[in-house]
Image 1 (cartoon, helix red, strand yellow):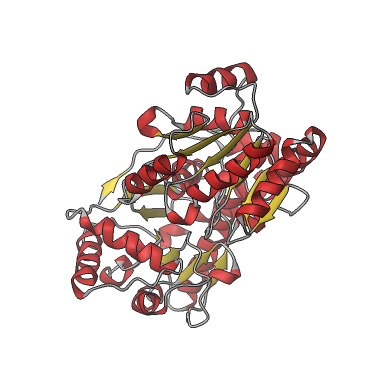
Image 2: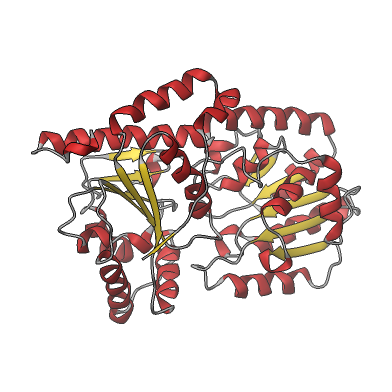
Length: 423
C-alpha cells in the first residue's frame, strides 16, 4: 500500500454556501469521534471520481478532529487492473467470467495489501479493487465499510456471487442508491449516500468567462460557436461514440455546433487508451470534434473551463454509479442531458435541471431544444445549481460519514466495547 499526501481544508469555509447550521451539525457529530483514525483505501490517487472525492473529503475529516489517512493499493502485477476492470464491467452487466488465474491474482493482491494495513479505528474500502482486504485483515480491530461507487442494478450473477462473501465480511456497505444493493446481500447495516463535489477546487471554483473562453480556444475550438461537452472516461459505459452520433444529428440542423469529449486516462483503467482511439476513429477527422485527455494538457482548470463554456453538457451513460461530472456542470449553471440510468436521475430532475434520455435520437432532440432556447438553458442551469448546493456538496458527504462512524462505534460497543481513545 502507498499513502497519498493530501492538502488542508477548513469546513468553516463552506458555511457561506450551505449555512452555519449545517456546519454546526458537522462539528457536533465530529466531537465524540475526535482522535479516531480513519483509513480510506482505493485503487488510484488520480484519474477517477473516487480519487477526486477522497482528495477533498480526507482533509475535511482531519479538520474536524479525526486522523484521516488515504492509501492506494500496491499492485505489483499490473494485470491486476485488467482483472479489476473486468470485474467492474461484469458488475455493470457484461457477461464476463473470471478464470481461476484471475481470481487468484485478484485475491493475492488484496492479501498482500492487507498485510500492510496501519492500525486504525475505521476503514472505508472503495469499490471492487479493495473488496477482499477485510477478509485478509482478520486480526483487524477496526470497523469496516465497503463503499460501492458502481451501478450494480444488473450485476452479472457469477461475478457478484464470487464477491458477495467478501462484502459480507464488512460491518457495513455504502451504496449510492437502494437499487444498487443486491437483494441477496446479508448485512445488518446498509447505508445509502450519494457522492459529492467540492465547490472550492480548481475544477469547480469560480473562473472568469474570458479565461474560460481562452482555454477552450487554445484547444482549437471556437468559444463563440455552440459547444456540446461530455466529460468522462473513455469507456463503453459512457458511450462516447453515441455522443458523436448525437452531435452529428444536431449538426445536421445547427451546422456551427462543436463537440468536445474530455476524459482522463486513469491508472486503474487499462482500456482507456483503446476506447479513446475508437472514439477518434469514429469522429472520422471532423475538425469540430475534439477528443482530449490529460495527455493533451486537460486537467482540472481546463475541465472547469470547458464545462463553463459549454452550451449544453451531455452525460450519455449506459450505466452510471453517480456521475460527478453531472453535478459539476449543474453547479456551474449548465443544463445537462444525461442517460436515464444509475445515479444520474438523482441529479437531473427531468425538464427542470436538464433532460433524461435513453436513445441517441432523444438525446439529440433535447440538445436541439436547449441550443435553441437561451432562456430555458438559464432557468435549468439556475435550478441545477441549487439542487447541487442542497444535495451534492462535500459537506453533506462528510456528515454522512460521521454518522456512519458513530453508528459503527455504537454497534461495536454493544458487542463488547471499542477502543477507549475513539470516544
